[in-house]
Length: 323
Image 1 (cartoon, rainbow, N blue to C red):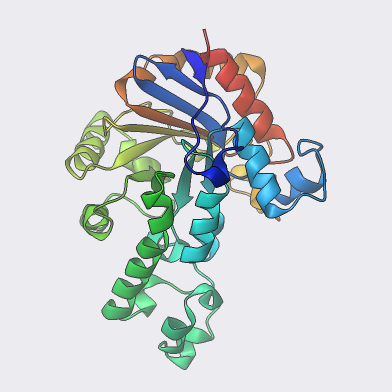
Image 2: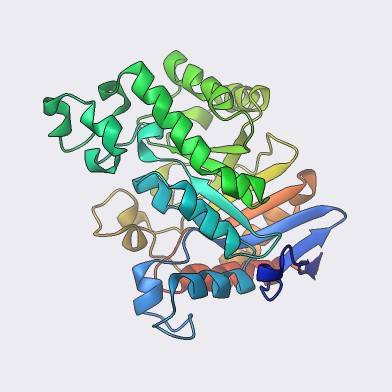
């Protein structure tokens, strides 16, 4: 593997630098993190050169160090098309954003106030006053419109070549069932033009060889990328480096902190507060190097975004994968 930079796309992006990727006979490996704006990274570390950097400056600085990032703000509230356009304009050609799907679309509890105003006003007063909103609270037409708007908002990223994939992270209670398999099958119909990856937090999808075969066959049939995870043993999620789409392999690193995986924490950063050791990363790099050549593009994303843990480990992993 060798590090590669990028060429510019427009005069406005001519001065933008792209963090190093790894190239191997036409296969490209992107290392990065699941957040470049976590509060602990901004306020409790010195990774960014200045605390007073603007949002644009921070993103450009991050992109000059890493060629991929996950956007998780879209999980808490759907993005606006103008915001997606700014993300595209502020990053160099060759940069990739993996976008986390809006919580409502993956069965997670969702704050009613995060829903588009007109759709929220169409809910019953009883539902609007609930602490959490779920898909079952929306009429079918309203749900279809929510999917359409979420998908349309990502168009600037897709059109500029910066949309890596849309990440659908399903909760632990999303177990393998006929209903949930139908829901996965519908993803390709909902987002026919985008690369889609799926992270299944219920261990039951891959509990046995038979379960794994059935799950991976479903994802292959629907052309959905399986998200491999490195997670605490308390999650009961095995580390399965399985490739279900030839164009993309995705792996997310959640750290190995058992005590916070199922416990209450004040923030997501606290939940994934774990710094991988060099020995742990060496072991992971050995496993990863065996599979990345099976996909055209690989996204390796550190979700241990507490302070500068994620950026530290992302840089170390990239170095370990470079011969």
